[in-house]
Length: 323
Image 1 (cartoon, rainbow, N blue to C red):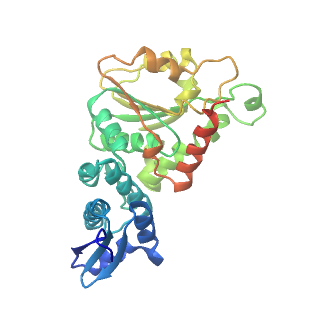
Image 2 (image 1 turned 135 degrees about the horizontal axis):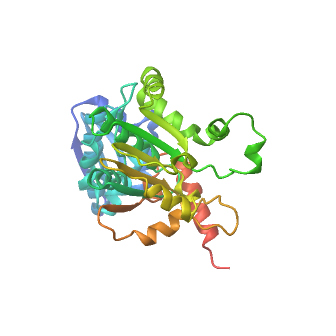
Image 3 (image 1 turned 90 degrees about the vertical axis):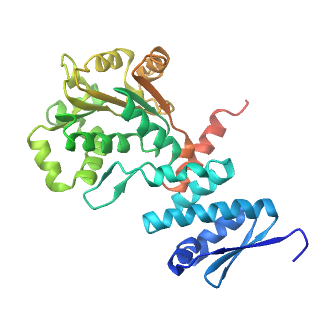
């Protein structure tokens, strides 16, 4: 060991915590060592870090945060590890406990639904404090899922009488006309992600019961026209595919005691050529209106497979490269 290489021993009494930190086949340790430029070994009821002093300091902060995560969640998954590393490198790791202690609701399978990133925490806080919130960001950032969890919890707490989930059907013309059934049946494929999330959070029995009683309504955006939605939690998903007229129509449906969450990804607009996205326009029009908040999520808030993050990064480089 050279003079510049230091050693730091971090006591950990629980061997189960050490095993979680190392991960299956030491995959977590490989990621930590490669990212923070340190070496790690398992000591007697401890982890030992080796490296330059600055790198060891980062490693110690990371390990202490991982211990907190494991103590609360009883496990450490790859997404949590990667985000903890990013937070330490950005100097934001002191805020990780805010995420650990925030549970929105418990799913039908007993899973705690909570924000996984500081961006998602900001999104949840905005929903709590405003009647209209826009969640704008790439796929995998939890925009719709977290909004739905907040809606279900508000419904269970009797803050609203019903939940309304809606999406624009982009292909509302000829191609849908060849499908059998009425408009609802034609657009059901567009609403499938919403149904799936509802089913996961509520469970089969509650899902069926609430739907049959009309307490939860899943409908195409066209069904919102002419209505006033009181005492409702309304979520407009895939809002980048609304036109300016549709967005204005939707926002003016809001009645007393209601809350609206509008989610979308302005990089994935599927409208016909020449049609403006209502989400892009409204973000400029309502940016400074009291009671409305725009929350922009980024690739750092992606909680899907790590490859999703890399795919979005690759597309950004391709789309914005100098030609």
